[in-house]
Figure 1 (tube, rainbow, N blue to C red):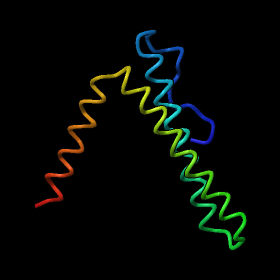
Figure 2 (cartoon, rainbow, N blue to C red):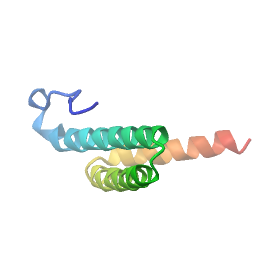
Figure 3 (cartoon, rainbow, N blue to C red):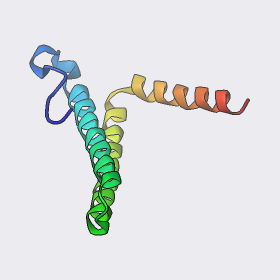
Figure 4 (spheres, rainbow, N blue to C red):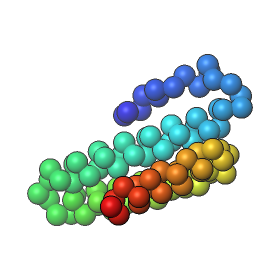
Length: 94
């Protein structure tokens, strides 16, 4: 993603704006996690590696914060996440 929004927030309804803002924020944080983990994997400098891994963990916390807010606003999302967890459990326990 790297600072480019895949959604034009001006073209969505007022009802969905906050949910889309949270989803975009989650995308940005996940993109940052991926970037920092890739950079960490490619450096041999132990200090840089340690800081990058620490920052990636912080970004994962941010994902959780945005997700918690999204689940408050979007009950269908909450329901579908639970459904997905159940499906994975069923598929992997066979």
